[in-house]
Structure formats: structure tokens, C-alpha cells
Length: 143
Image 1 (cartoon, one colour):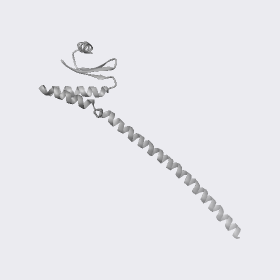
Image 2: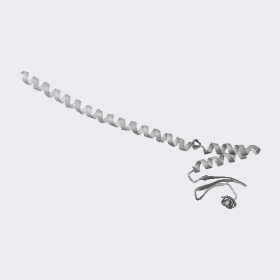
Image 3: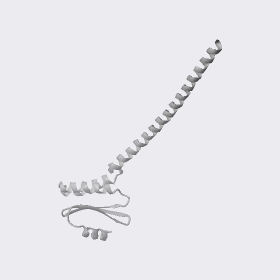
Image 4: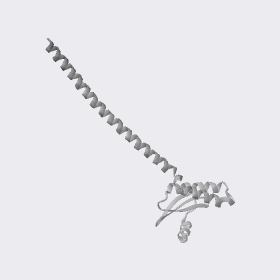
């Protein structure tokens, strides 16, 4: 794995850019800015978006001058981004999906109520018609 990382780093062109390389069950993500490269290795199933959020966070900590304590910063950031709650977009998408399901249930319920109201209205019209017929027959019989 170390040889693969060395080869990859040697192939990163100068400049500012970001990229992901895939090899077997791993993804190599990097963010390059001028002469500095921020690099992380993840399992293939790990979110690319979270990986780059981690790299951007590390880059900002580095450029803000974390200095000697950067090892601690790096360790804390790795722990934070490894948790499932680090992917805020996926969390929001999950909540949106829940709301969508609730809204679909509500719409189905409203449609069922609408059908029941239509049935009730039809029955009321039939009852009204029947009452008119009964009244006219009763009037005819009474004469």
C-alpha cells in the first residue's frame, strides 16, 4: 500500500485541484493547493463527499497554523468524520425522505376521505330524490 501511495503522490501535478483515484477496495482522495497536498485513504464504501469535507477541513486547519498541535487536530478530525453523523447532506436527505413518506400517506388519506365524501354525497342525493318521490306519491294518495 505504501508503494501505491508513493507512486500516486509522485504523479500529482502542481497546482490547485482535487481528485479521487480508485484501487481495489480503496479510494485515494487528495486536495492539492500550490505546493501542498492533503491526502486521505478510505474504503470504497466511504462517502466521497465526506472525504473531501475532511480534506477541506484539514486544509483550513493547516493554513490557519495549527502548528505543533496538528497531530491532535488530525486525530480529532479523523474521529469526527468517521462517525455516521458527519455527512450532513445524507442526514438531511434521510429526513426529507421521511417527510416525503409522511406527506404521501397524508395525500392518500385525503384522497380516501374525498372518495368517502363523494359516496356520501351520492347517497344524500339518492335520499333526497327518494324523499321527493315519497312526498309526491303521498300527496297523490292523500287526494
